[in-house]
Structure formats: structure tokens, C-alpha cells
Length: 79
Image (cartoon, rainbow, N blue to C red; front, side, top):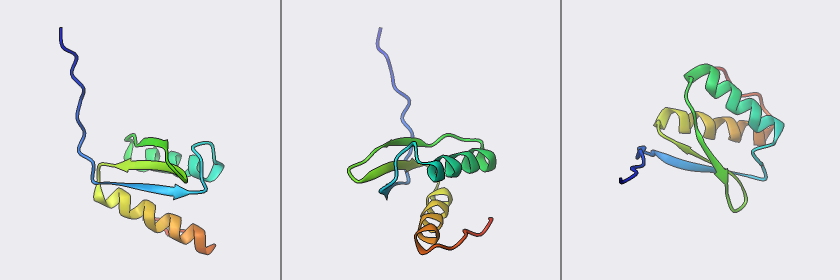
């Protein structure tokens, strides 16, 4: 019997430098994502921080903007 893996389309990958999957802010971002989309993200350990794989372009753009706003010390806008 041959086992097959489900192949998912990936739009892109972002790595959040200096963050881990146990970071409270990152956990809050994941909870917010699940509340908005109900979906799962693929999270792994990257070279400099936590790495997240996205299947939707809009999700990737939202996460990128949120991390940039966080780095500047501003609150991200609610979409």
C-alpha cells in the first residue's frame, strides 16, 4: 500500500525574526487568525525565528503588515 501526502498550495513563507512559536504575541496572532479564518497555518522553526507558510495571499499580506506595525510600536488596524 502506498501512502500519499496531501499537497497544499503555498503562496509564500514569512519568517518572523526573534520570535518563537511560544512567544505570547505570536500565540495571540495565531488565535486571531483562527478566529477570523478558522483555518490552520503551517508553523515551523526557521533560521532566525518562527516561520509561517501561507496558502492565501491576503493572509500573508495581513501578517506582514501586522509584524511591521508591531516593529514600529503601533497597533495594527482591524481588517
